[in-house]
Image 1 (cartoon, helix red, strand yellow):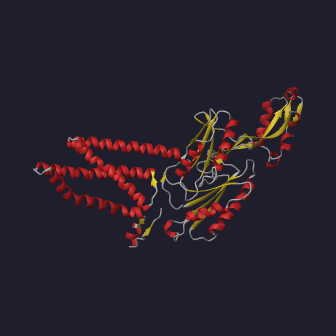
Image 2 (cartoon, one colour; image 1 turned 120 degrees about the vertical axis):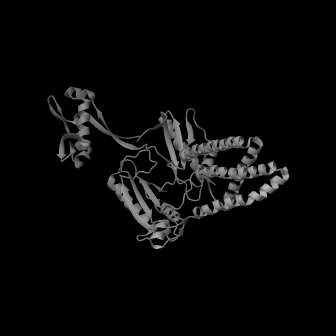
Image 3 (cartoon, one colour; image 1 turned 45 degrees about the vertical axis):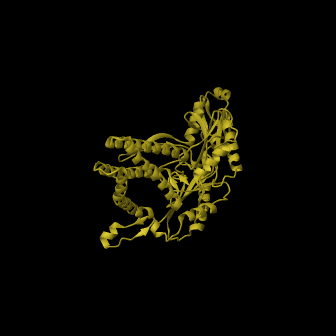
Amino acid sequence: KVVFFPSGEPNFVYVYNEMPAGTDLDETNRINQKIEERVYEVIGRDNPIVKSVISNVAIGANPPSSSDPTPSATKSKVSVEFVYYQNRNGVSTQELLNEIRENVQGIPGTTITVDKEQSGPPTGKPINIEITGDEFEQLISLTENFKNYIQDQDIAGIEELRSDLQVNNPELIIDIDNEKANSYGISNVQIGTAIRTALLGSPISTFREDEDEYDVRLRLQQKDRSNITDLMNMTVATPTGNIPISAVAIPRFESSYGAINRIDLERVVTLSSNVLSGYNANEINTQIRESLQDFEIPQGYEISLTGEQEEQAETGQFLMVALLAAVGLIFLILVAQFNSIGKSLIIMSQVIFSLIGVFIGFATFGMDISVVLTGMGIIAVAGIVVKNGIILIDYIDILRNEGSSLKDAVIEGGATRLNPVLLTAASTILGLIPLAIGLNIDFYGLFASFEPNLYFGGD
């Protein structure tokens, strides 16, 4: 399988919760406590591999990939931190993550996502679908239709496709009767300023303490600004006296969009999801692309796969250009050194044979191919095998200059240089084995108290 960046056992598990727009902070906190209890049902109260469990409500509760990082009373997060890998006694934190994901589902009125810390460079979600277009109502309809269409395809491995668009964001609209307001001699600005001061406050003075200054703001008390009747009964000054706002304005509740996102000036709605354990993001996105062929997209609208897939494509393209550039520069140096295109091509052919060995190794051990790390490794291997080829061809040239035939020079050169090449390869392999098997040594403990604290695997 091909992955963008390899991932291991999680060190953190994050449970993100989002309540419906307009939910009170106390209600969000109550639901978060219920989520925390369900997390404890999985990990236990005194689990030795759990370092801490921290809850955030409103502040610090946004996922890293959130398009709106501002604190919100409708969001909460439970963070589980595990001890270091060597102290987990073989317990799989990935299995704990899967159990937590199953156990926190089913709480009414919540949208819960379970995730782990991101490894490697920052990217979007593994499944990230952007739908762009002009007409917002049509865009919302297209997003919902495509979401239902993908769900009907029954593609395994998708946690849950969720839209970043809030279509039921509650808002209070105050309709001002301009004729009545004009008859009293007041303007819309006066009414708006009075309501803004009541809700958000206005600075009226400054309090100074040593070198620090603090604004003193005037606004209604919590109980007054939370009641629409009290808010509308506030008075505003007119040339003939004070009148209540309700005399010239009527409040009404409506639902609106939470935000309208744009990319390159085009309106966009994003569907995203995590990938369940045991499934591959590339395979899932391939199935989505195939399903997209049979989905009817209106003219002027576009559906594209972005996020991690976009980053992966850009990284793969960059590494491919880097590999071709490295091979090209090596070839030019070889031509200049040997003054022969034929000899240079013979040496460069080893790069192709090295790729065969790389993929045989991945197939033998059943390992995932990382676009980033495998790409960098292939570029590094190209330099090593070219070095071995230079040594071999150079020695064959020496033998031929001494009068040996081509056949004898090739046989003797191969036999003579086989040991140095094998020793070089062996030293490289042995040097990388500790890294490959995750061998860890505590050098401080080794030199301080002769206790190296050897263990395999880890962070």
